[in-house]
Image (tube, rainbow, N blue to C red; front, side):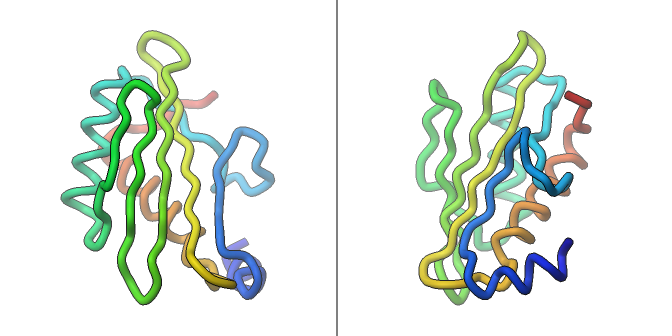
Length: 126
């Protein structure tokens, strides 16, 4: 799927995760942890393990975090945390570049974030 995402990245400039995503790598991730702890873990991952990523705004009540990723072009990322049960939360991302085509950069940014988050908190099945 990665090669195809690079090819489609000639005209696509965004990537979004969801429960209904066809690509298994773009499925919503679920974690067995409280919302506050998960939000702190995500903040730590973004601040300490993802150079060039900066949290611009975090609305805890809505569970939305706006992140800017600096590079050749600006990448806007929105991370959404939803508490589905008392000790179970879901995490979705939307990553978008300005302009036409990203050559898969948004797709790989989402994969990198999930990879680092999964090292801190292992995901659970839906």
